[in-house]
Amino acid sequence: KKGKIDLKAVAGQASDEVASDITAFKELLQGDLNNDLLESFIHFTAVSNGSKQTWKDLQSFYKKKLKGYKQGDVYQRNAILNEMMTMGVNSMLSSPKTPVRALVGTGLGTVMRPVSTLLGALGESDDQVFRGAMASIGGMVEARNDAWRKAVADFQSYNLDTKGFRGFTESAADQEWEAMKSYFAMKGTRGEKAMMLVADSMRNINKSPFLNYGPRLMKSMDTFFSQLIGRGRMRQLAFDDVYTKLRNEGITVSDTDLDDLVRKAEVDFENKVFSSDGQITDEMALFAADEAKLTKELTGFAKDLDVAFDKMPMLKPFFLFARTGVNALVMTSKYTPLLNMVIKEHVDIMTKAWDAPEMLQYGIKSQSDLNIAKATMKGRWAIGYGVTATAAGMA
Image (cartoon, rainbow, N blue to C red; front, top):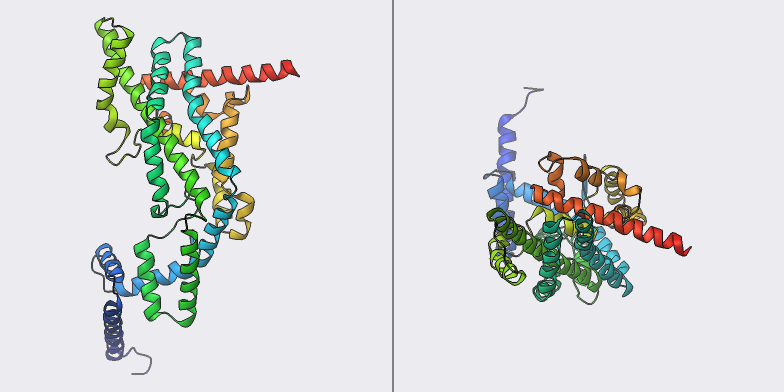
């Protein structure tokens, strides 16, 4: 009747749409020589628990990936714009001075932390923390060859990193990208095919080692110094363990024997600092590495600004690498007299117990960790006052 839904007509239309989808999918699989589309479809089927809408979802996913979209707070740039931003980053970091500055800055950040711990422990006459910091520096020095090999491996595999350089631009996995190319080559409109061709051409250019050597080098340096910090942390944990046991049992050993005991104990702490594939898992080592690389996550107003500028690519060059700049200011403040007294990290470490919930964000999980952190803070105060007093005296 007039004004009522014709259920038979609706059912017939739905049946025709399903048949059309199945036919289209069969055509795609016949032309999918590398099985990229099939593997993507299987993935979508698995995560959707066999939903009948899987094929439509897959088509929608590819179109959004290519053209970008905005939905509430969720935002994704289109493929061409994303590759243009990656190309811009490669260009901005192509100056030879850029990796040199990164090398000096990250190197200083890596070395100055245990040096600050040494000075702070010396002022407090804390023998365990002082010698533990010395052991940490020794571990770093001895790990340089292993860290170099890991850095070289990361340099060679840079394009396999789906997060890009320091998470600045997220790049789609190669398999996902090839599947998207196959889809638009067979089912895309002329405009979509042209858009996919331009995006793929730019992507291949961006993957060239000759053109992305800047971010590639800097990522490798991040890996090198992170490995040094991890190995230093591993040696420090081993020293604390051996030193505590000897002190509790009232045993005195020579420095040579102590060094041998620490090296043997170091093996037991490897799985506490590193995962099976060589990635750092220890929270305090991760915190120290992010601090040295200036890659700590942004919070508060700075994070809101970063998100806002990311959604407006035309303004991004004016707020490029926000994490690096903000973290550099914070790091400078930690060595600046009076200003370092109001930094939340310093206040928490100097006033709270090691088991306070706030301490986990700094990787502090024991009284020994807290003693090390306090010595580091005090050492930075000493360095800051020393440099400031020297500069004032020279002036």
